[in-house]
Image 1 (tube, one colour):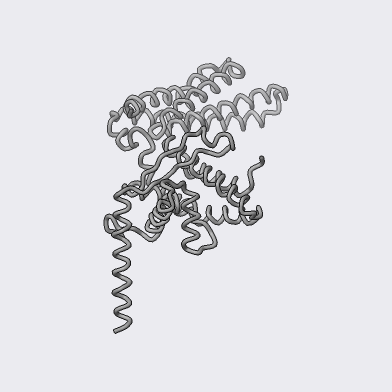
Image 2: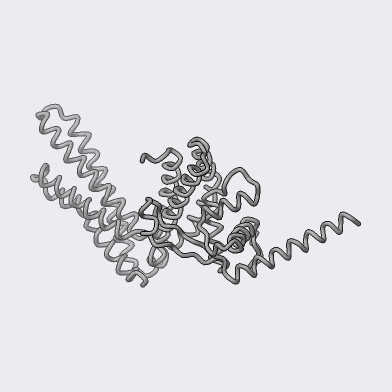
Length: 215
Length: 118
């Protein structure tokens, strides 16, 4: 059965304000609201209430409860992981934080280089169109890979597991673009992949600093 | 302004009241939507309590130890496509807190009516 607009809005809002919280808190809140939505619809059906009235009720409950949802999220935000971000920072040596900065700076430089390359490639009318297309695709792939690596570095303390995934995917995209399009310029490809490698290393360092998840 | 420890805000009082009413009718536990319905009927309101307000209130009461909750087995509602429900019941501490709050309210009401008559 197609969900009603109100149900969709409620679910969307719940998904938004539970984003980034612990899986337990997120799942509990979402399941509880799902149960309420189901019961509300069932109750309306049993009482012979029209769909419009039900929709209005749901939207009203959603809107009027938003401030409390935001407060609830703030209360739960502080326990977003095994250790709070500040504690993780304190456990790691200074050199680790410097590594993050180096990786982020390299990613930003690489990104700027890739953007510039794309502009130059697009403006180069002397090459064959297929070559222009291939080179543009390669530069765009580099940009995508570097963006992933950069985002991973920025979120590594908050969510090292996602950061590690981003580093792997970003590195794979950059490596693929180098092999397929810029094989002749592989040293540049290696340099571009450095932020992804640093991101991967940092993610492992943060996970080691956070320790195992509590039982 | 921080409230005094153990004091109940109106919604929390109303939730405990609703849960205790259901208990007196033989229903030891209630899920959020059912409590919202009782709250609406008791208040003579047109609308149910907002999602955020209701579930935050329930969580706070559970945090104070005035309510205890449990999740029902997911297989119970699976046949009808119903998501698993979270049931709440009032604890002894919750009953005590409600009685204290009710006494305080009655004392305030008496004092106010005495002021009006004098």
